[in-house]
Length: 338
Image 1: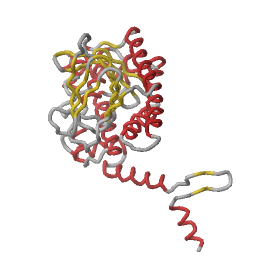
Image 2: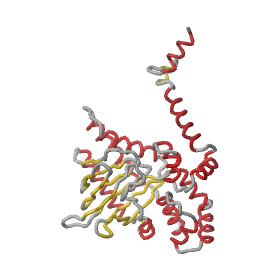
Image 3: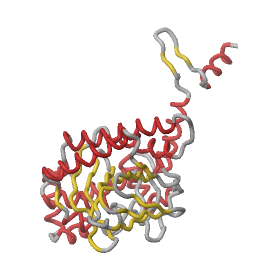
Image 4: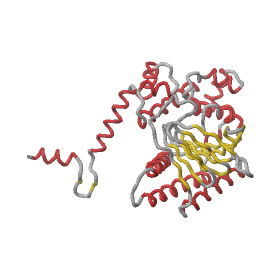
């Protein structure tokens, strides 16, 4: 739902009120009931390699979740297309390009519920049709999510399980859906909208940076123009409210996006630089090293080394011994004894 052009909606969309939260709780309750009865239709596109320049499509570094409420969403992907209607759910894996065209129902306007994942933050918003076929944000709230990794693991595993074939596939999928939807339901009930506590322009600036960090033109001047204030005023306000310089915040969000791409995507360093809003890969490497103490290539090597170290760790730890079954270290240890 966070396609290019959605930025204006972030400025005009309302934060959720008590009625919106009640509606959102009801939507998740309905989805949970359907999942429990194996009646929640799940649609997941076939994963493809990230294609940054697919015309009319966009993609995200993290998965996106849609619950159909009213009307239908016509999703298009590089290799397929499908529709998501009421009582249906769609999970779009990270990096899969997609486009959306919506359509009202016979007696009801279009409406769906969309979940997005950021850095320690989850966004939930209702989408409506702003002009024929065009969805946009109606109301939105950002929730603090220190357990973001749990949400991401469930969403990613749900998408992977959907394409599996096996006797326990449906049972596993049902359990994953119940866990994921239940966590969203609890988040709406008890979660805190930390980002919404920021005063207006700071909140809008954060939204703009998080949604448009891939735009190489994004900077203090550009954001200030969008918000109708001076760059000096915005910089001072942002630092006063957050204790962080806006220029540093922009870089940090871009680097966070680049780190996720290094961890999950197969893009080259230059492709990641451009996708993260850096016009010059060499400058991207310098900024990355300032933030992480290593170049992007060095960081990628460190990730691979860490994965290999985890692979050779004990598979089971007992009170009196370590079990390396089926691990490489056990074989090495026995070879060393000979």
